[in-house]
Length: 389
Picture 1 (tube, rainbow, N blue to C red):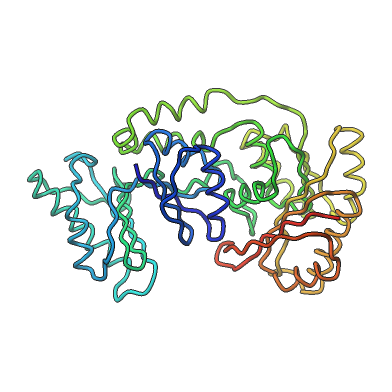
Picture 2: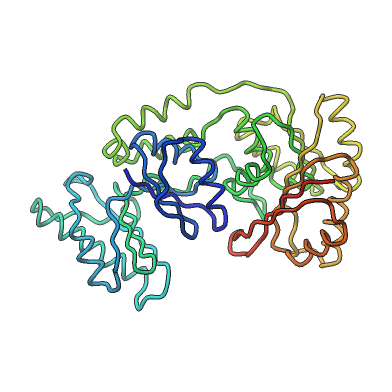
């Protein structure tokens, strides 16, 4: 079976590593901007995709076409697909169109033409005109035109997997949960290993680390949504039961392993609320204050009272919307320098303030540094992975 899985641009190889770890038999077909096309056995493939902590959306590909250059080409291609095995006569559907590249028409045009093609195909095959429901359809058909390649797929996730549902407090510059998990993987982190976030905001990085450490699977957050999608068991019989089995056993670890520092009391309180909502507040210690002043004491307390050896720091620092460039530079420099002085082995952070980050790293020369170009929201950014020396 062919699957299409999306992620944030730049994290494709990170997602591939995770998918391969979840299901070694996966065969990757194509990797392109924010998307991975892979082939796998139906059950193992859908479980790997849904268990991913880095993937956003999951689709089962019905067919893919090449040399698609016009709306007429799209109509003919979609109409050639047999939808009678995936849509029941009494069910409604919606087209979710996407367009990548230069074309003489819009994604709205694609949706209109593809929708008509589905209706006409079903009408010819069954003599029944399917209902369209754009707001609450039974079946979602994803139609993506990528340059001249057309992918027609069934939506498995109704909403992106990054929407875990635990986020009660929304930080104004919140990090996507899937990006947080990508940072953890880039850092070489393993479940249970202590992590310090010196600018933790709403707590996303630490919450995701705690979820993974407790073995709480991502589809468990989406179970009700997945159960509402009739197409899942239709294309992969037994998939929903397999997903439910993942949600039955959860580790009850109550040891504090993760520490977050946040200078804004309201944000720190929000982080606590989010951690409680996610069921992992027993594993995270949130502290209010300035990381550049608190870090030495935090490291000391962690080692003496919590028996934690802090060697890894992962964070999403401010990138300039509310801070002057010089203040931002001083913050980056102060935190990285302090982490090195305190004996941390690795630092990973993401920022769109690339010029400032590069200037700081040139001045400090903290150690071997890897850079990964990504798109954070709409902002070109770098993920920096620094081996402190």
